[in-house]
Length: 191
Image 1 (cartoon, rainbow, N blue to C red):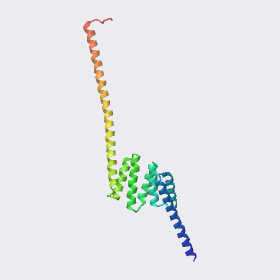
Image 2 (cartoon, one colour):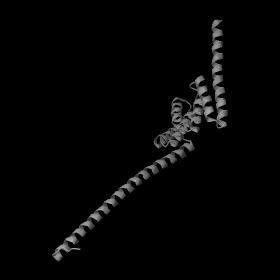
Image 3 (tube, rainbow, N blue to C red):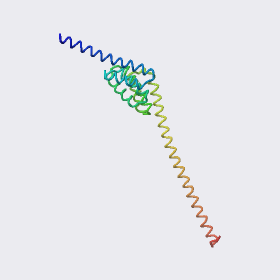
Image 4 (cartoon, helix red, strand yellow):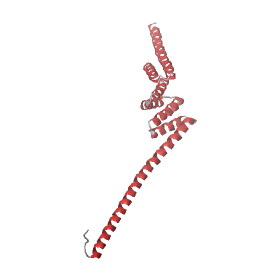
């Protein structure tokens, strides 16, 4: 009889924990919809205190963090979520949002890798495919812009060297002309 009582108490407490986590997620979602992302973050964190492995709370928390421009923290949380989830749709969404976070902080290499992981998990994700293409294009433009700047700076150095050489040549010609004039007159002129 004692065992039955203990089992009932444990089940009630576990259902209470699950209910508290669910209630916190619902409150967080309401706050998120009202664009109160900082308060939503608090509710999602509270849900994770009740259920540390709650994937919905982690995903929603990452979204609230992104809305507050806490991209690094969101990306780390999404990496953890994608790594631990058994659900491919959650993994794909986590990798996709991680790619968005990395794009926002201009980490194109990590962004590209996240979009690739999202596509490996869900090859039919058109948004991930489009964002991957955009990130690859940005990376290509970044490289060409960097190469162009290097080329421009080296061209200006070449031009400067050419002008310096030309000035040295003119100076040499002036000295030669002055020397010829002094030799031709035989005397130095006094002005």
